[in-house]
Picture 1 (cartoon, helix red, strand yellow):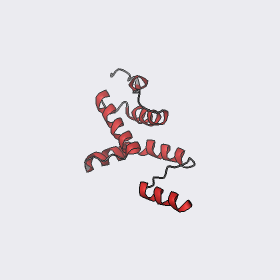
Picture 2 (cartoon, helix red, strand yellow; picture 1 turned 90 degrees about the vertical axis):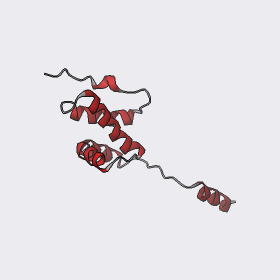
Picture 3 (cartoon, helix red, strand yellow; picture 1 turned 90 degrees about the horizontal axis):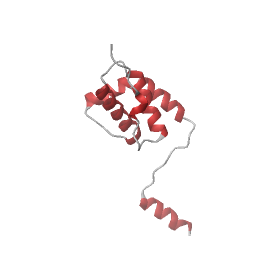
Picture 4 (cartoon, helix red, strand yellow; picture 1 turned 45 degrees about the horizontal axis):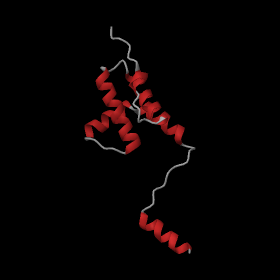
Length: 101
């Protein structure tokens, strides 16, 4: 029998509450399916994709997508009514500012 994994001990100091909650939920969902190091790696890949927009080889993306279905759906549902950031190119922002004067 495998020893129980202490998921809460795996939080890193740079993670926001939101990122940690998502990564933690991913690890809790799959903690019996993988060895600790592979689980930590998969969870990090998932949060890199979800929060940073990282892309990996197609096989990896498919694997993470399949493993993260429930966690992703829950996270995205929680984000529906929150404010979303909109990025504007600096040149567009400067032009808009200039036109207001």
